[in-house]
Length: 265
Image (cartoon, rainbow, N blue to C red; front, side):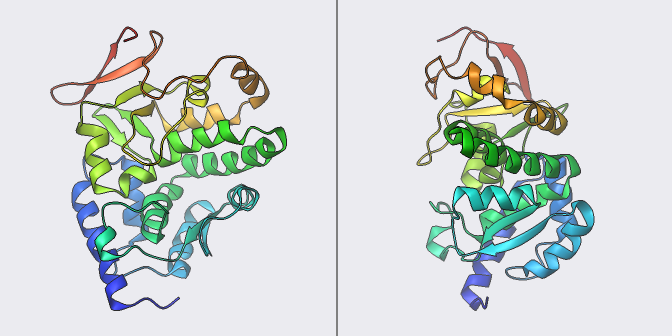
């Protein structure tokens, strides 16, 4: 696909401000992937060049799609270690918000994490789980897992919370909000609790889930989801803004987030 000079400039502007903002905020795996793929060689990168390095590292590749694809197609791609990415890029007046994911969100936001072997395996496992979820009528629950991890996940590290979700790392305003604003809840990852939590797409997140490690996320996904789905069958959804007495809550400390216990509001 041929891009205009203006479109290449949009990529460069988006890349430049995120590359400046993310050190100390994004997780090490994302920053290492960004460096390995070298996505800033001037303008929108070519998928063939990305795939040469990505395939060597984890066996993944990026495939071009015209836009959002049907669920079964999406899961089929992921299960076969292919990440579907849109080719269009937002306009210069849409730098801070775009409802539909564009090439910057898909490639800058998602692809660097696919250079990390554990996360790459998680994404494949998610695709395989998605195909099963379609047959079981559980797509709503599984979509929440993708939303709160792949798109808006936070990682606990000795240095404090770090971003790994693509919806955060590709957005300047959400990168700041997710880590520094006092208003959202930052809760320890619990699979059943997460699957009972809806989300919204039209505003900053009210709740973020914090994983202890990428390996813990993969391990949670590799288990049999039959009992997990059974556990979410009876109880009602948990309101997005709710904090339960059983939740592990991360509160803002002087230098980093400290784990605290908080009673239900």
